Image 1 (cartoon, rainbow, N blue to C red):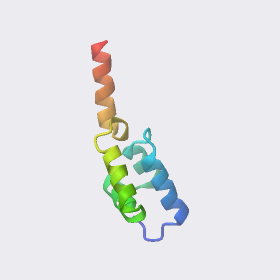
Image 2: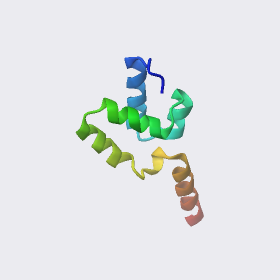
Image 3: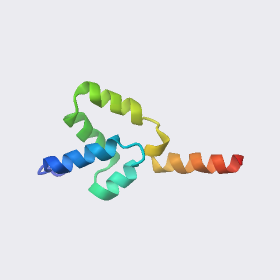
Image 4: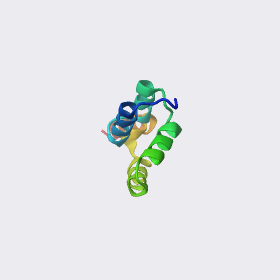
Length: 80
């Protein structure tokens, strides 16, 4: 990540990371940051308790990972 990130840019990254329906891939398309870099930003910018809550929330969440979402939806369609 660029070291010259503005507070507005960091705020936008955090907002997208908290949104359930915005995948890490979409955030990467918009900001150029990989999932690992997003995690680093969240770790650095959030309080420890907020970071832990966010990590617990997004770990394994189907809607945060495009591939998991596609597999999940395919499985639902196969059951129908």
